[in-house]
Length: 302
Image (cartoon, rainbow, N blue to C red; front, side, top):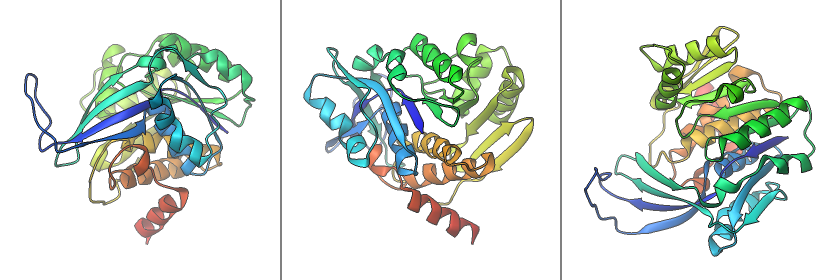
């Protein structure tokens, strides 16, 4: 089973020709209200990729909570330890340009009240995976990771949004997933100097004695585990919207490990999921199924 400890949001998405610069106003024709949040996105991605998933987090006591949880509930994610609190449901404000690139502002809301103590109500064992991001308080992430490690579970941390990682948390992590910018930020926080995202991932892996993955957009993903480099190139797709591509990768990668696949296969399934997500608009609506992922892998290998 995968236990996701993370954020739950509603996304307000506006499509524009160009993403506004500081001080600039641009007009979009309309907007959509879509369930999102990195924790929720990754939980749903893992569930659609074939894993049994429980999501631990917090939402508000407001109408947006049901929107935020609707697809998770529909797809069978266990929400029994998702708590309703007095703060408003978290929200993300997303602009997507004509090339499918995005800019995102997140208001934490109820996510700031997510508590690791809820994990004690879930049966966690040696074969399970704890998957986290950085949109809930770090002190709670540390508590969650410590609890999971004490139970023998594997801990995966997606460094999103970017930021330095506390030594106490890093010591509890088995797999660190980053994009190019996040890898540079983590390396800088550790006073490591490298020229490329791959350099950063390798140096972090060596310094922290853990597995690292850096996602490279159109270049696929590179993983470093036990000193060995693994590279999976991106799958050719027509990009509509890159929102949640990283979340799709994380969820599908974690699901593959949970289902017993090896590291390289898990990496490939993550890349396939991220690529497929870029072909549809929105966060959660774009996350692919296990069948979609397997079909993409077969087509790629043909």
